[in-house]
Image (cartoon, rainbow, N blue to C red; front, side, top):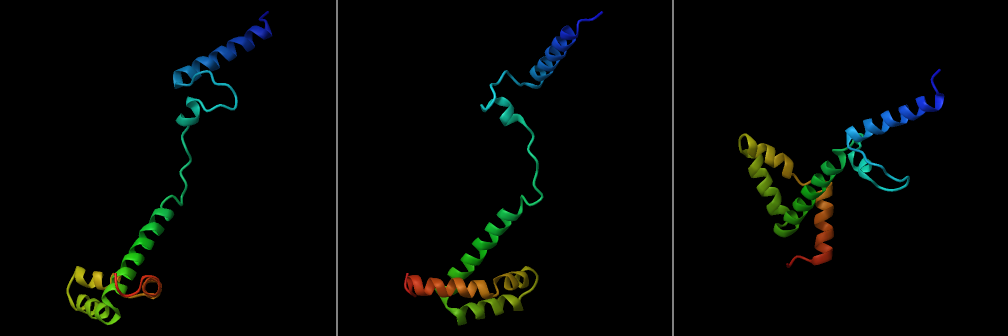
Length: 117
């Protein structure tokens, strides 16, 4: 008859050898060893949301700076000139159109730093 303790022992040895083949070492519980860095991470379906929001915020801020610097009437004239163009000029005119957030950023910059920079 096989000793049940011996079967358990060989099972543990097989598990340790399998972990060694994966690149794991002996680690104490509660410590950060190699296995903490080698585990595959779950990919979030929202991993592009934060970078997209950051790009959008930067774009609105730049538009607000431009609107505050050159003034509202000149800005609208330049956007109208872009809208009269062809191809990508129309796309640029549509993207540079003064929206609510652009006007808000421009107003806050105007009250914070004034018209002279």
